Length: 430
Image (cartoon, rainbow, N blue to C red; front, side, top):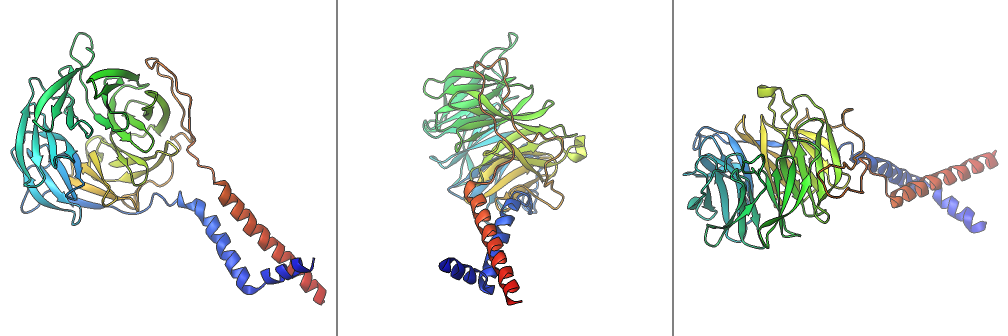
């Protein structure tokens, strides 16, 4: 008892009280980090300058990790602009393309591949000279497709199109080395759109009407088909941290399906609500924060859209917030060197830069709280065309860790005990 009283005497000293109260305040402030997670600001990079100002309509974006540069396909200007991620300014203009659409960076060769929708070809750009060093023609069109994915294990580029094939290009010869046959639809050649590479599985995921095709890069054949619950499948994003592929769908209700690359089945669904004018299109993965960005392509001044990018946590598979960007956001690329997401804005002719430090907010007008139309939890759909049902779901609310709760309880108990001893001493004096 003597030692307990001595301990309590020490706890009632002014210094201990101040430290304990400070610790308690910090502990109570921790849960608020999610609430302020969607605050901050982004910068905007205008693509029209005194040096370069062709018609501006940016589409595809690619990050060159070796040079610390962002390549932007300017669809309307038939060129590709090169941005320094140190200064956020245009440093080069690559000409000689024809309606460039999507881009893919080849880290082994130090080259950027650009799909040309108008000429049914892919241009190869050297990041050393910022010039076109090769042009790869295709027998049939890329219209309706034009998606690119770099397979680092094989040294190949996969190109989606409307001809009933996914083309495989060698980065050594810059020639088509294989054609992946995709199913026909109503007797017509199938069209593939967005396409991503799964480095862990050695597989390619490609959007295909109401489903996602899984292609093995070993034999260049379709090995699985994952049916989607909604129509209008748009963008795909591969999450290497979770081994999952996020699939955007813009028909009501607006959702993002999450595919496990282990089972090739849908394991979660992120409900984005039914916002007027919101149209989730393309997606990109932020490896620094473990988040997926989804652009809402319907521009405010064109079709009454929101000019925002939606951010999803890959830990909870839940809506985190919306980021206000430029007019008509399209494609995105994450710069791991700077910890920034670059978003092309088609109608405003600019790039929005979203740093990881602010993550989910680009301006003071950004939405920072979950709208009532967004479901508080995610659930696992059971699409009829998927061979096996998913068995997992996740909540959008993350429970506090046990260690955190225990710390708060200990600090609070200590303060209560110290207060009780203080009161007993005060009564004893009188």
